Length: 399
Image 1 (cartoon, one colour):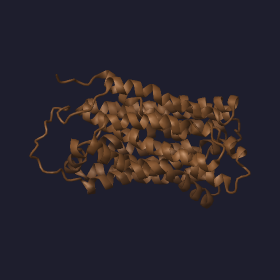
Image 2: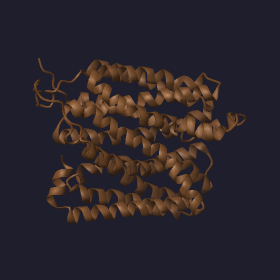
Image 3: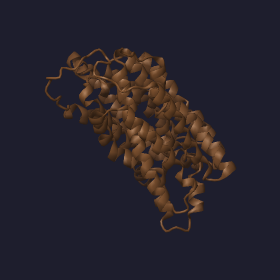
Image 4: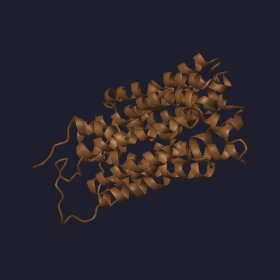
């Protein structure tokens, strides 16, 4: 008897994406506390920023293509469950570790597990659903991730304020709850799930390298913009006089409300051609950065950051849906893994990009202004593509 995926399966494939949010969002408000604890370790600031905060993103970059290959080669469900179980134990490990280097190793494990969870859950959504239904569930990933961040960021601040910097890592045990749901309600998909039976005599499907490289390049730019606020918000607010971890978490949550709102808006805006949609996405992000760079107080900054996050909420489902269109079952895992890797590069690169721009322009806030120029340039290029690309380009974008 053929099982048909429905709302329950969609929800159970959205929830694992919240695990990926923990990798960077949970630490946003209490990194200074970790710095203080390990201040006697040589080069502690570099080790904490590069080894604890951004280490998971490095391994997402390195392992996502491997995760996609494993999903295509050995199946989706079991590898997802295994990754979620391991994730819980490597995630909570810093609570019990005294060595900064051992904590860094545990964060490597977090990154590997996150790469599997993100790649495989996205691939399963593509396997289970098709057409507009698939696009709604893919857009729902961004909304779910951003809503989770609204909870996780202030929760990290509250737990750190009450139990110290080790306390927030207990949140990683939440993964074990999701394991039970995935094991109960998710099954290994077949190529016939979306109504497209596989011809066993079919030759191996060629991987669309040129298309994927172009889309991953644009995704990289979008990811740098998206993670700029997540990774640097505490520093930006500190420059404006906000140092309390709980207040940083609250203000970050207020700004981040723009992401789920932008994602829900995508369901309406997706009727636009891809060029016009990208123009809208990057124009909003650029306007937000422009205002953030000129903010004189936390209120001005948060209002501009909210506009920025609206654009970020739009651009991620735009790029994910555009990328997954036309990926056959046989290479879907590899395609999604490649996209996730590009997105993770943006997470890792955002901090370095802002550090470089800040040194060149005199601080973090002026660096945001420079990012706005990049966004406006991409928006302008998207307009030109929409105006002069013609129907042929639009058709190519959809395939």
